[in-house]
Length: 514
Image (cartoon, rainbow, N blue to C red; front, side, top):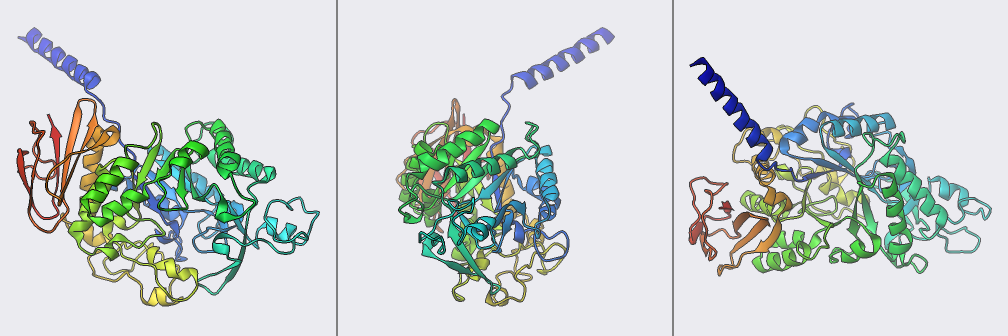
């Protein structure tokens, strides 16, 4: 008997080892969290969200299901959003120090996560060394680093939208100009700058360096300036080639300046790795089946092999979806589409709890965008440790702030409610990460005769997932002509796939086809 039991135990162990080695291991897909760090979590009580605050909340992000963090610019700047630098090589002291930054990056990597940095090196302010040294000084070694409108270099050229200056929400007037991206010295400077953030200590290990960059406002012909043409091949392509020599695994995502552009020329000429799927953002928010079909066909199925699209419904420049569509059930549908339709999903901080905010018209200042970038709502009362009220008592954007106590939007309130938007996000992210077809699978439209039901497959080899979405507030039926056996609905185990199926208002159903 003893030998028999020993044999059974050995067989059980062998079967377990066999199962572990032969069962396919699911590679988790990437889920990006696009964070406006000044508004996320304040670690030192100065009302500014900072790097150490973000570090304190990495557990939260991992629990949500996030695998990567996209930071807005960190460099020293004269604006609260940190675009338009005064020094590319320094961390804004309100965010912390370079040491704080390096420790954050190392901690992110220890958790198996990635970090991306937003970069916009096409513009500098009057506080930047290049401006200070080159304006009015033809002998400056930076004389061709920025553009001038006159031969004596007394008049720096305008920047984006032909602006000579920007008005800050705090009353500050910020003068800025355009960098001369045609200068070989500027290209060389950018190569060194980007390379530093890839490998700060130059040891080739990259545990202290970024995993990629977001290129803001990248253009082939920058702001229609006559001198700044053909930049894809003369600036961006050589820059990317050189920094990939430092780390071949670095990922470059470019934001197209024209949001109606699908970005294919960026892939081909500038050699970027990823673009933003603006067309799918518009389609998802439209709740229009034909828009979804058409944009998915282009953005997901025509993107070149080896390239990717970021799929999103919010970012730091867009009105928050919850302000456009207060209906939480519709917010859940949009989230499900964003995560399951294909591409790389990107969450804008606070989107997961339905934070609200729109662009306002309080006069010609950058305060108009603060509504899109308010403090993350951690607490039911709207107050508490870490709240990042950097805009407190500064104007209408504070007086009319969207964040309000006891409104059901805070993380504290939503964590307690199993039906909340936050818990729905966790559910859908877990679902996405649990099936390899949602990570690697090809998107395929599934035809049905109901204009209110959008359905599609995600297919990876023999693995097929079927997603059906009721885009309306009425019960709908749809026929699945390619009927095959399937698991129960992974969002509602009581529902089984039939040839004819019924979907409740705004219901999302997910089946694994057998």
